[in-house]
Image 1 (cartoon, rainbow, N blue to C red):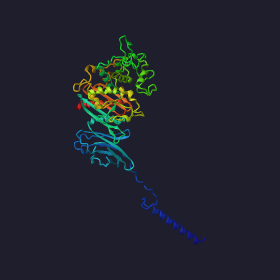
Image 2: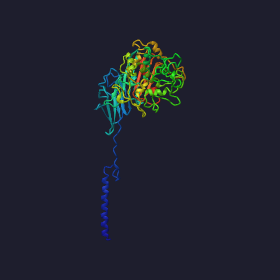
Image 3: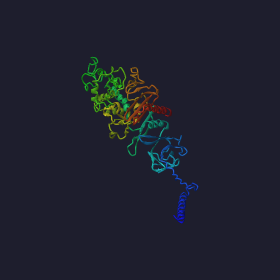
Image 4: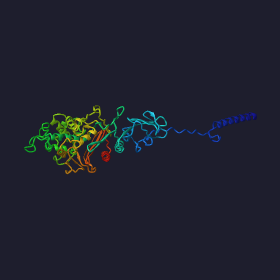
Length: 516
């Protein structure tokens, strides 16, 4: 190669290198490396937040003239619906309340479909109000239903706690003092599927489960006062089976012939007090009512009783207490046999004496519910509509409202403001403890359709709880003239649920005694 050619190529290569270097320097201009020529990656901007949670809902007195105590809501999720539950005092105008809220950082809020500014925007809370929290990223949001009611915040807090912890969509509560209605309230939803969602009212009808039992006993004792039955009448026995002078059992003609050992000794009082001698803890685990047992599933009540009269009692009737639902189903059958009509018809006839007309036997399906009846919501994969209400009837299928039940208790509590529909001597029979002295020992005794006293809640003269899938109930007649009832349209299977219901109602009754 000639020297001149070599230098020519060298100069050309140097020029190319200079051009490439200049391009690298230019490409890094403004990159922030001080002109060193090092290529720095571009720093990405931070992503917009997807957080969209409501953390606070409050009515501050500073924003709401006349508001007391800055009430704060319970924010909870019940059956996958975000609810905001809050009570304000009776004197407050809920058509123009100004809430103060807390939401996720940079989230925006609409309330009732309109833009909302915390602590400034007035909202009409007469009905359900939808609150929407939208995240900064514009893609995520949460909807909340705000339920504002007027009432006593201290009482209502008891109910909100139960609803929130145990996933209960709707509750009704009523109390009386001195035989006058003191407090009545509906909370949450009777029907989650309606549009708009149907709210629970104090007059909403609920399945009562075993709170039905004191009403069955009331029917029996009304027949007793009319001279048509005695607690000491036999139920199944042929004439002379219990002594030459003993009468034929009330239902002997329906279930004739010889029966299994012990059955012919069962009296009406044994059914009333769960001392029939039949029990669930038998060797074959007989439960003819709430069961999937192939021996009983799909059978009528009469068919189930036909099986049981051929099943020996586990002990001599009257000897020991063992809670047994079939006994109360039989009481309903006895009412029908004596009156010649349906159990529902006689129940309505008896409760009409207390001024109650809206009482019924519930139906089997959601589609058959009465206009003012709540819907029932099962938990833990159970079915709220699996029981045959025609079979359950007197032992657990009555539907009634909280205010009706308080009216009924006032008509059978020895009071003088509301006339009792049973004589004092008959009420004495109803509220006598027939069982606590019998083995196995119980924490509280049982009368006719009522548990008598309570081993912890000493202000309770008598009470009864109830539960079936989709229903939980508790009713109390107090020793101090204060009565109460709490009805739920769902049942939790968390171990302390029943205790929580009892304590909530007890606290509400104590509050009633204090402020009324």
